[in-house]
Every structure is written in structure tokens, then in C-alpha cells.
Figure 1 (cartoon, rainbow, N blue to C red):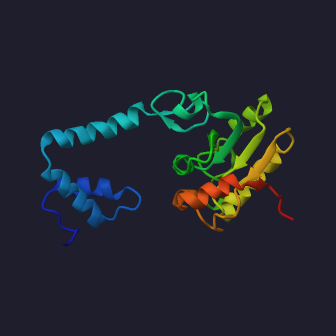
Figure 2 (cartoon, rainbow, N blue to C red; figure 1 turned 60 degrees about the horizontal axis):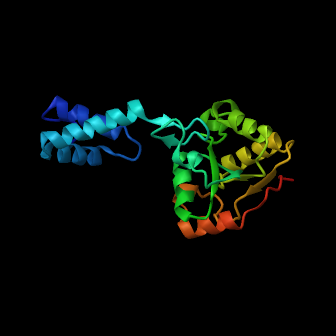
Length: 206
């Protein structure tokens, strides 16, 4: 089917909106829209209201910047978590990936990205200040740098090491069971779990 001549402007607009999402081409967008059209009005209304409610009512945890239904997420409010360890991750997807391994019982800190000059992302665009404040306040024994094993991830690791190294805190990184160039959210749970358990002290580049 050609996607240049839609029989309805409403259909075309809906396809355009769906195809604006990452990883969704126009053919996939068309199939999704047609699926919604085949559903009853109540299902479509619930679908739309869920998205609106998500956008308007979602919170970002005041402590770790994870997504939450409340001001403080379930992980940060869990009294059974080890509050002496912070695992630094790039994104919320990485929190989910690590939690699925069931190998980490500490807290998290979501940076919201990694340093990437080519994408115009510098230290000022990420959640570094709140992380340093946690370490500076005291009570943190170990900071685990669990960032993607890419050049950008390594650059961010080094920046964090330089910034946090002046405090009395152990800085570790994932064991290289995670292959070079991999992103955490795509790493299988067993490999990621072992990388967390076998983490090593961060070594600065020569």
C-alpha cells in the first residue's frame, strides 16, 4: 500500500503521530492505527486516557530520578535496600534491567543520559550534582558505575571518577562480562547479574 495518498486526513494524522515514535515506521504505524480502529470506543478511550494520565501524572523520584507514581520511588522508600551503595545508570531502562537480575540490593541514581559531545550532551545536562551531593553528605560506601561499555559511557565513567574521587568512597565498575559497546538494557540477565556481582575497582585510563 502506498502511504502517500490516505483516504482520510484523520487516518493520516494518526499514522504520522505513531510513526514519530522511535523504531516505528509508517507501515507499522498504519497497522497500529488500523488495530485501534477495529476496537470498540471504550477500549480506544481507555488507551488514550492512559497515555494522557501517564504524561500528566508521572513523577520522577526526588532521590534517584527513577520514574514513579509518587514523589519517592518504591526502591528508594524500601527500608530493606542497602543505602550504603549507589548504582549509577544512564536510564530508567537500565534500572529495570539490573532489577531483573535480582543481584543488586542497593539504591540507584539515574543520570538521564551519558556525556556525548556529538549529541550536544555535556555534564550540565545530566544529574551529576545530585549524585555528588549524596556522596558528599556521607553514608555512601560504594558507587557502582553501571554505564554502557561504549566510548561515551567510558568518558562519563572517567568524569564521575574525577568528580567523586575526592570523597572517601569506593568507586567500582561492572566486570567486563558485558561486551565492549553493549548497552545494559540489551544485555541478558545472567551476564548482567554476574557483571554486577564481580564488579571491580574503577581503573583510570593511562
